[in-house]
Length: 494
Ligand SMILES: *Cc1c(COP(=O)(O)O)cnc(C)c1O
Image (tube, rainbow, N blue to C red):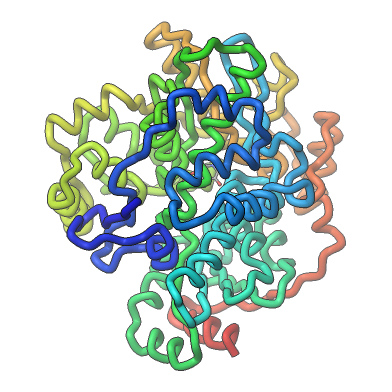
């Protein structure tokens, strides 16, 4: 299987090159040239398998250079019982007859980023060997919360990698900050940046393109790499859980073979819902892809009108991992719909020059046929959390609530009662304050005491990785100005 840039199809890459490099030199995203189809009886074959085996089967379709033995080792290490608190890894909980919730937060950091970030380090280390890269990968991450911790946990003590995470000093929840500053491992670094997420993100991008810094790195035997969701090694493991969820429903006879389902995903950078689209391209019977946004609803407008316009107010919401105005992975969908790297490049140039682009009528029609966009604000988010808990005794986080609201809106607008799989992306215990408020607790406790308060209110225990933060030592206290991020990099490398 060959990979190309979404902006230039003349250069071909192997899977290991795509994973090592992260981003194409022309700024495009490295993407498979075509999406392989699952063999005819694949779903029947894999429905009896454990999650780890399903992952091997599906990832193998994209990774010819990797042996089944290699992939099996990675899957067992990434999704083992020491990492995930559910033997199903990504269990499906049926909420009512035709609504099924795919829980993606049973991993070590309690958010769905673990599904990919537990696998990526294995793929990256092996890719370094396969591409005969001699240097050590220095992975830089700017995070608004979940990615940073997920990447730290995934890469801790992975040979031939160092990882450094920058988070905005005042832009993450207390639990999220504690998760990061207590991180263990010999190859990790964490630093707060004065400013907001954009400052941290812009700072990281500058480091990547700073020639002097890159030369200094090379002299010390390192090169920069990325663990952000633009890396193909992050999208691929996410395809697995949609196919796995469908197989669970088949196995448990909740759907019939071949029956169509809709999939609803709370969306930020468009990585997670893109993986569902790829699962459909592989042959999974998905009909509609419902894209759920919070008040930062740039995608809702895009999917309805075909106009992407990021020139709008940015809101800090209670679903912060979706507070984003540039959804990077959308570029891969544009390539899938156009098969034309020149057209994609044109849209992306307009986006960077004017903050806006309008797709052709053909692309708009294809978008509208497959994707439905809905959004909701914080008041609605909290109403949904309360209703879900009161009606079904089911506690969900703020991001997942946005998805349930979108599904509700879709169903009442269309009357379409096709069985739906809703992606649940974080443990409610990561966002205690907002969830407690939704449940009517007016004075929420601060810090880790909020975990106890939410447990007391709901009768549900906090996940062990969060409860365990109490006993962890704070290791990182550095706060840098955004112009001094390079100092943090050089001190980590020693
Ligand atoms: C990252 C994240 C999202 C958004 O996922 P994308 O792949 O960026 O669309 C949604 N919910 C949570 C909890 C997240 O951490």
